[in-house]
Image (tube, rainbow, N blue to C red; front, side, top):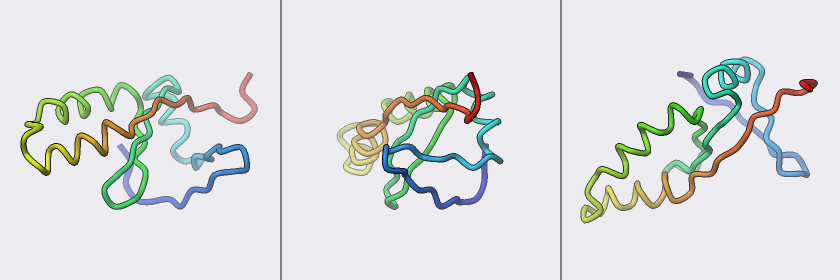
Length: 91
């Protein structure tokens, strides 16, 4: 859906600001429902919830007996958290 990287910061309340260029598309793609998870290269991955479901299913379908598959499963699925994107100024 998106290309490129963006440096994001958390505020004192643990909130992350999503760049405006991505915010509208994320809200439209997942009605504001997102999944945030870890990446092996120590960054975060952010998916609209509907886009995450097939990725999650594919990860869970991989063999848990293979070391690499098990590591990816623990990382991506194990650290996945549901989140809601709120648009500033929206009621």
